[in-house]
Image (cartoon, rainbow, N blue to C red; front, side):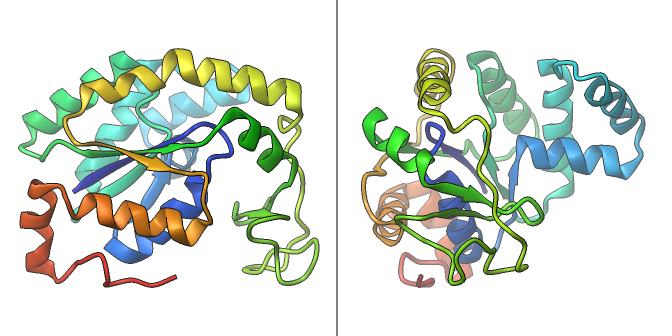
Length: 229
């Protein structure tokens, strides 16, 4: 199965992606992860990407689409896509690519969080520069202040987490990304203004109402109670 995870910056996508990945046993990959993995592979596409990234240039949609297709062909049980598709054009490309490969239409999970809450959250966000795990000083602080629970690296603050930058990113998200949900039949709005464990439970409950998902995964023993936080 393919699960698309959407939400404005600071909505908690990273936390939910980790929980869903553990629950379903499928990898979670972001657009950035895909770019880095393709470069590391040394493939012709990766070499082309490396040149673009080294020059600080924008990666065209056509190349991002190719990378996603490569990942789809490598994945046997499915995956969670965090941050793709970002535009209506990418959404249509993905739908056709899946249909051409007889892969079910994805489930699109959308974390809905108010702009006010987003600004407050990002002000408290800390990121591990090594393993990329995200912490919140309010909702899920690290066990040792200032250091990552997983790799003990000192946490940092993202330079684009200022209120002005966040509001601009929210406007861009609303204009470009939010409209793509209409392209997917199984689009699940989730209340992101909750504790992470409650958001995760709501995702599980919502997915349990999708007939195609239930028929596919009950055979594998996956249910809304098969994972705990």
